[in-house]
Amino acid sequence: MPFPLRPIALALISAAALPLGAGAAEVSVAVAANFTAPMQKIAALFEQDTGHKAQLAFGATGKFYAQIANGAPFQLLLAADDTTPGKIAREGLGDGGSQFTYAIGQLALWSRQAGYVDDQGQVLKKTDWRHIAIANPRLAPYGAAAMQVLERLQLLQTVQPRMVQGENIAQTYQFAASGNAELGFVALSQIVENGQLREGSAWRVPATLHAPIRQDAILLKTGQGNAAAQALLQYLRGDKARAIISSYGYGF
Picture 1 (tube, helix red, strand yellow):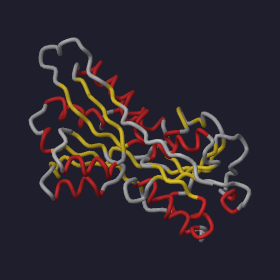
Picture 2: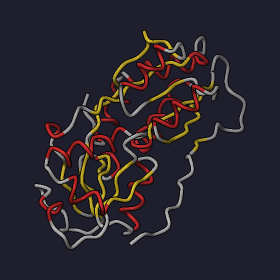
Picture 3: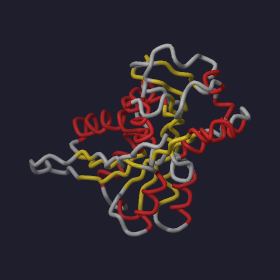
């Protein structure tokens, strides 16, 4: 049964109203939606430790690429894949030498209902659920990975008629969290913290069922010469950031 889909707005962390301290700078960062929770924590520590401020916008990597190509004033991109930053570098929109993998994503099949998803994903073969949420595979790498999983399991034809598509992984999670979809292919980072499932039930999808979700950062052309942008790239490689990233289920 169809149901209305409500677009999710970009989440923003605004810079504080107080003036920046001496030597401090500000950087505008486009962040893949799956990385929302860890990046919010990292940004707070980054400001505390360096004095620099990060303005964060969260959304689909594919949409961010289109915005950057059309002159959006982002200075850093934290993508949900490694191909988009590579494309940005080839097109002269970013510094290819700055590109690095800040996290390797983990896909999960999740339901807000405890005990609903088994630890082998066999629930996908059942017929008593109506909807499964998947991020738009053309825009969101986690959506592309979900489609690869279904193809590998030879379930795409039976599951596809019941798919509802989120614009990005944040909207996809909302469809499952609201109950509009009984199941959702989401980022593990959206449902765990400190290694523990926050609610519901989930199958951690084996990485062998899809291409690696390498999430790369890149300094954009507009960020060259920005001290905060350079500092944040370095901070993401540090122990404090990596501890946060790992606590949300990402690899390196």
